[in-house]
Image 1 (spheres, helix red, strand yellow):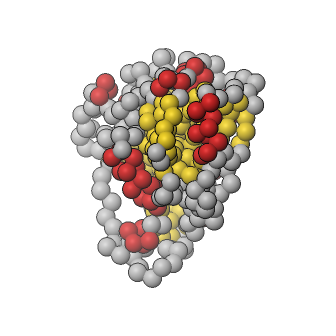
Image 2 (cartoon, rainbow, N blue to C red):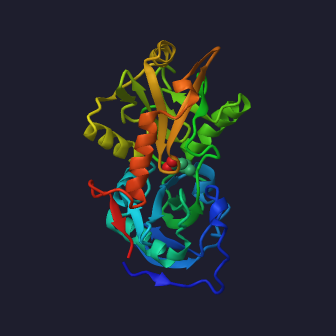
Image 3 (cartoon, helix red, strand yellow):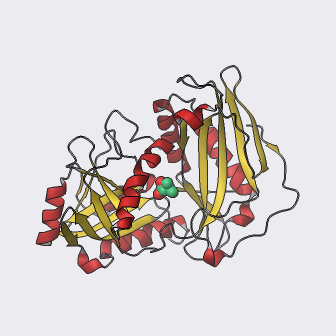
Amino acid sequence: MNIRVEKIAVPKQKPDEKNLGFGKFYTDHMFVMDYDSHKGWHDARIVPYGPIPLEPTCVTLHYAQETFEGLKAYRTAEGKILLFRPEMNARRMINSNRRLCMPEFPEEMFVEAVKAIVKMDADWVPSEPETSLYIRPFMFATEGALGVHAANSYKFVIVLSPSGAYYKEGVNPVRILIEDELVRAVKGGTGFAKCGGNYAASILGQVKAEKKGCAQVLWLDGVERKYVEEVGTMNVMFKINNEIYTAPIDGSVLPGVTRDSILHILRDWGYTVHEERLSVDDLMAAGHSGALEEAFGTGTAAVISPIGEFIYKEDSVKINDFKTGELTQKLYDYLTGIQWGKEEDKYGWTTVVE
Ligand code: COI
């Protein structure tokens, strides 16, 4: 891919690495590439980070033809920069785009573009503990038209954000509201795709949870409101009687890269993993009997987020005395150890940006 580079005239001042928060600061440059149905993908460029002009009738603004990804670049103690399984994000974006009738962005081009923009802004990859450079590739329709149809022009963009912990709680247990009315996704819909519309649909549940003193929502299936699916913007796992349970990837659940990595590690560590439906009643019963030993969310942004309590209708149950479980902590340490280059990468999951 031939990438034209236009450098920023005056580089921005870098933020304090100790107070990054999540997704609040952006680097000097962004990657942009255009698509139209005649030329296909063309005009790959790295340009100064800045606004993107849009037609008021842009299909994305009206009909949400948009997909995105999230991955991170990590600074190792030796100063190298590592990416974690970027090809998984590339493939997931292809699947998301198929669902949204958007053109596919080829896997090799995706990885090349991510490497090129991270290399360009390499001095923005933070090195303070628990920090990384969050990478946000996204694609959206640019055609201006009010009829509902698949647009004939798109942009693929990558922006970068030096970030710390996603949740202000860090790797500490949170209270979760089990949502019994609103739903995030149904099979046949877009739940498995990483598209903005899914997140828009989730915000009301999040607001409701916060009003009840909870950090996130646990989503139940959209048909019976019976089976556990995801937590907030993350996949969710439970340790019940020393075995692991998580919802299957069967249409309404996002195929998380962290989910896949954690399941791989757990199986390697000898755990029995059930990728099957778990009902909310069985979950609460396991909580009350003490069989539910640990629960945690998995996602790129937070990596692992321990769950300390579930609130469901009039009922509530605490997990592990509202303390981070031993396995949860061990998984967090091991996976982030691979990501930050502290642990041997025996699965070949990291790629050096050079
Ligand atoms: C992730 O954890 O990767 C997410 O999807 C969170 C993101 C929407 C901020």
